[in-house]
Length: 84
Length: 415
Image (cartoon, rainbow over all chains, first blue to last red; front, top):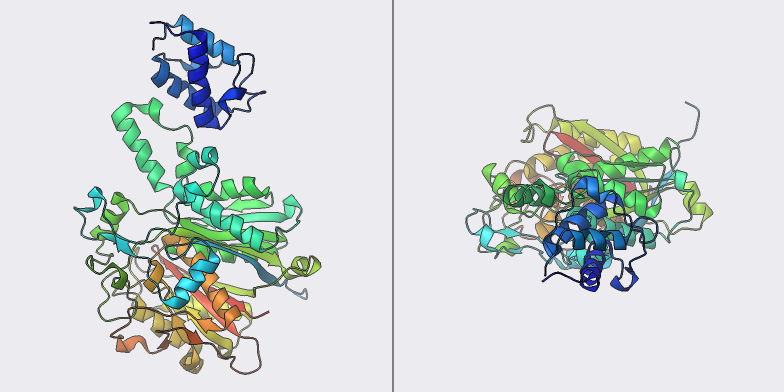
């Protein structure tokens, strides 16, 4: 069954809390990773790898650099057909 | 020269060791003669000839921020914990960031991270290696982390010299201050190497004690029954400061960092020179650098690791370098309790030597039941009172030697 945006957001919040220490309730769709959440490029790599495990969606490096906001990741994961 | 040399003092101490998670508990354990060595009960240890080690008294990952901890190797975590204690002990000095330095090294580096990265590579592919793997495994990682933590911009250095690394770091810090590069320097050593590869590799050198059934009796420097060292882990850090800077801010001074002596054996990559000429040279140089009369030296915290080859030779070197004055020196081998912290050793043993000077008591060398006669100097087997010899300030020395033939001797004197 395809994941809803809310399910992806919840999963992403858990990953970002684990990897970067940003509380999940601060991970809202409009936030940018670099400026709003203070997440650096190394942590983005960790997040991408963890997202692959959680959502079963691979995020290649050339796509990762275009994912600026939390919503960008949600959209990418949904388009790529994540299933719970 | 004509110019007065800058006096250097020690204003802060920090430690996390197998016998205590801070300086106070480490020191009380050392005076009580308590061993930190235990049996290794992990499955991976079963096939090894040496199945004992000295784990740190606390897990450093539980003492620092969770997210920061996952980006740091365990040896870097130890360094941070000890550095925070040393910094607080020094009164968290107000110092211009461009006048604050860091010198810290481990002997081996972040080897747990190296191995974890290799496991990830083989089992899951390169994508699963942590993007922090390189800063976790590089031997200068601790120096980098500490410079960030304390905003130290005068320079961050890693003095890699195996088991002399921690002592060399303190010597380098003294020289940073003398040369005018910094007013305050955090300096020390760290190690977290209790891992199958290291235990197997040291066992391959026949360097480890295999007294597996009596872990607390395994590290026995200067004893005839010694059969190798016991691997320990942890970190020691000191705050090294120009005397002028310390006086200006009214800092409490633990000791004067009076001198450092370096030498290299140029003999064998991993065995001590049997005539100890390199050690004697380092000791003569530290006396000269500190301007010490050998008669001032009341105590030596020896490198003495409990290997058959090293301990007695070191005592002979002390006797040779100090001459007739060596008869009044009290020698302690605290590795009998902490095990051998490799790159951390010189730092925690400097902390112990400074406390011995301050408290006027040498910690014991435990397990010395059948002293090797050829030692030739007085070795403390219980806490031993240190008495000033003459009117000049009391001095203590810390010896540290490393594979590669590195010899470092540090001198501290009473303020």
